[in-house]
Length: 159
Image (tube, rainbow, N blue to C red; front, side):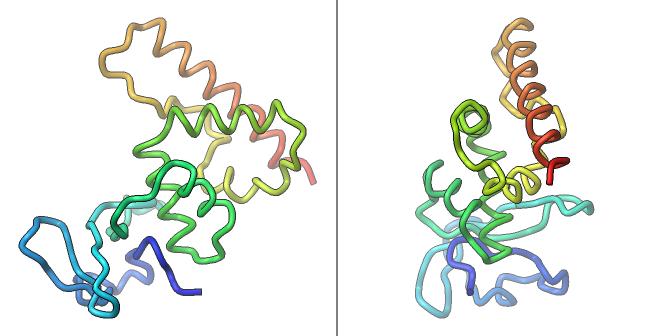
């Protein structure tokens, strides 16, 4: 399946927008697909261990729900990892709320294992914004991420 929403620097030899079939516009960091005329924005996406990969996001940007569905259901690596990246960058609070709800509801969590693994949710890190929050608010956010981390860690260890 061809990427529909994200283009990533994988394999690593892709360096220029033209390598992705994109051409520059007058707008900074905005490109046009030579194939279908769609608009794309340059951004740095998933970190595979060497820093965040240069990539492109199709415009208009997807909503939280659309990104979450893409993460869970897409068989395309660029769309899967791109959705994970944007969820973590733009929607960490919503992501936390939805993931904790999944553990509280009676759903087949095995279905979400790959998404949780990609998001690295077993690592208890506060991913929500801290600017303008009190120490108590930041601590409460961390406690919720830590709780989710323990749930995910247990799930990923199970068969």
